[in-house]
Image 1 (cartoon, rainbow, N blue to C red):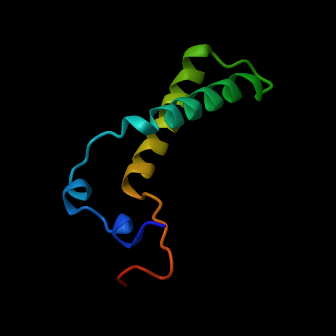
Image 2 (image 1 turned 90 degrees about the vertical axis):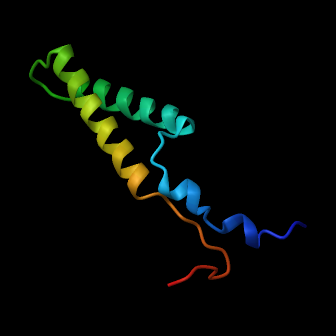
Length: 82
């Protein structure tokens, strides 16, 4: 089995750059579709398609900002510096 200790060390060069992660594009697209369709279907009063799309864009953008600024870090065997 490979030594995984070095795999969990953050690369400082990658952490400082704020590039858009294209791997997460599918995740943001799914969020947009789910929120837009939910906005159209759930309310009993009529909602315009343009308003549902705006709500979907707002939700997906907010999710993308939170996901890029607060990424999920997994620590194995208490290997972190606090």
